[in-house]
Image 1 (cartoon, rainbow, N blue to C red):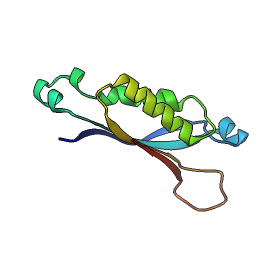
Image 2: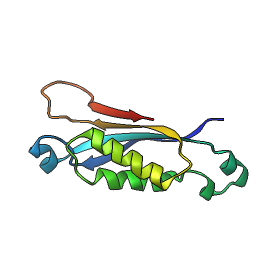
Image 3: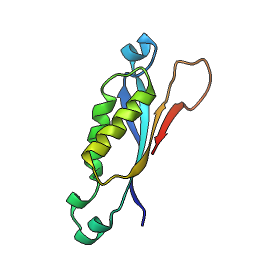
Length: 117
């Protein structure tokens, strides 16, 4: 059985980017996270202690996003590490971070980095 918790397009203002202006002015990001784990125990027990608490996961994501990085790759890694350190039952997942208004002279929805394990 495969089960997941999915946090979809969490909007966060943060200061990530290679350019100094990006870390000064900031940008809006959308973070989507899928955490895979066996939820059978939680389905039987009906206890939050046997699952991934998505409210707690959101706070972990917010905390990692609040620390400026040059690269989205670094932010995604830190989010992955923090979530898997906290929720030992997670055995895979996916993290996507989208910068909605990159400092690029082109019309687009955003730029995104994805980490899947």
